[in-house]
Image (cartoon, rainbow, N blue to C red; front, side):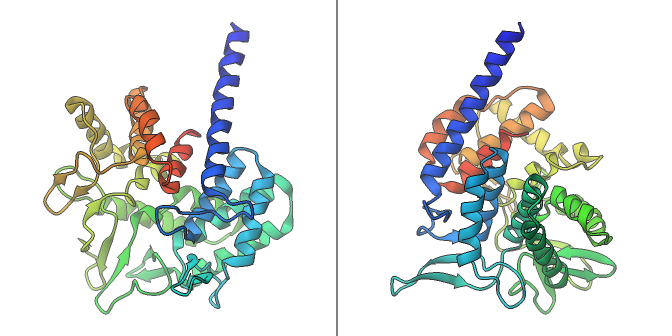
Length: 334
């Protein structure tokens, strides 16, 4: 019996590393650049954060160091101490940073990865890199309105005269917890607490799902939909973030997703992007990222994985999509 179990574990480990090898061959260049082939072969800070994390999860220190070096050499830390989010080719066929603004999820992931790498190797420069990013996140990306903290999606462009915009999938609670371990500041615990409150408030339609983007009225703090009113490729990460967290009442926060999975299973269908203004459900606009999150939720609530066969087929069709493949790999570690 023990030999059989060891054999199964060996096969599972082999398959996981085969996926990681394929991921690297598809998206990670020899110099460590992570390539988004769906979007004109750009590199953005989120993709760096994802690839660094996946390197660690596969115990691939060599790949981590290569990706990290490319990031340090090319994704210029701008004059406000955050990571320039977009690098690619301009109209003159020159490759360089295309947008100096940051994307907060990329900053969070890269700082988190650096702390994990410090814990693994005890190399102090990774810890210092994380601390520098954390300091700038607190200074430029966390705002306070009526004694509540909010996390901006980037330093520039999201605060308007009467409202500000929020991307709920950037509330990475497990990362806030890791930062709190190193930074004795109640900012991270308050941000986590207020983020949970925001998720409770930002539910739309009878489905009770979260949109990719919301806006907050400055006077009333009322949560409203933006022009992007979909539960789509951004909000898809919200249940993952919750499942990876230690939030005590996360089952309550995930209740609408539990019903959502049950509805799909009852209909023997897969739902994709949903318009939360009118409740329209797409039956075709989904990727292996959707299926992987649905499978993760199904396993958590029902101890089954009803979407596995579809994942195998769609994973092959989504090979240009680093984002979808990243989410798929994320879910194999939970």
